[in-house]
Figure 1 (cartoon, helix red, strand yellow):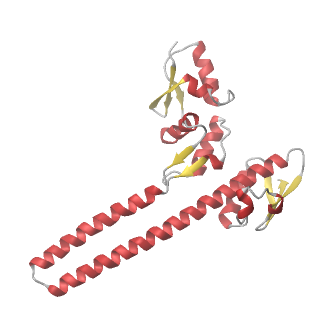
Figure 2 (tube, rainbow, N blue to C red):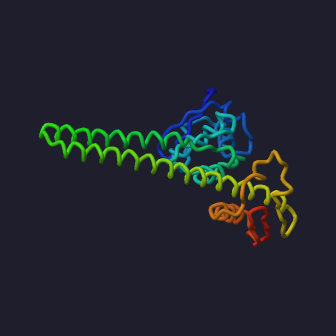
Figure 3 (cartoon, rainbow, N blue to C red):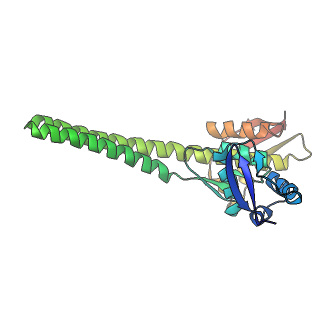
Length: 235
C-alpha cells in the first residue's frame, strides 16, 4: 500500500501523504475519500473543484491548521472551499500576505523609473535643460503618487481584513450561542479582556455584510447591531 494518495482536482494532480490527512478530523471529505480509496487503490481520486484554491486546503492539513493567502485570493473563497471539504476552519486560521502588495508596487515603480530615465537620457542627448528638469519633476511626482497609493491600498486592505475577521468571529460565537434558542445577544462587555473582539468596533459596514452572509448560511439573521452589541434571531 503506497504511503501517499493522489487527487485529480480540476485536471491538476496533487499528491499528499496519507498520514497528513489522517492527522485531522476523520469527518472531512478528503479523509472519507482516503478510506474509500484504501479499500480499492486505483487512479487519482477526481474532485471537481478549483485546483488553485485546493492547494490552500492541503496547506491547512500540512501547516497545523494555518493558511497564508496571497492578496489575489480572498478569505471568503477559502472558507467556501473549507465548507465544501468539511474542514473546521475559522477566519482566524487564515492570514493575508500583504507583503505582496509592496512588491507589486515596487515593480510598477521600477518600470516607471526606467521609462522616465529613458526619457531623461533622450532629453539629455538633445541638450534640453528645460526638458531634463521637467522629466525629473515628473519622476519625483510619480514616485510620490505611488507611495501615497501604496499607503492607501494597504490601509484599506488591512481594514477590510480586520472587519472580515470581526464579522466571521461574531457569526461563530452567535451560532454557538443560538443552539436551541430563537434569538440571542452578544455584548462586547461580556468578552474577556484578552479577547481581541473587545478592542474593535462591531458595526463597520463590511463587518455587517460578512456577518449577514455567515449567519444566513445557518438560517439566522441580524436583529440589531451596534459598536459593542449584536442581536441574532432565526430567519
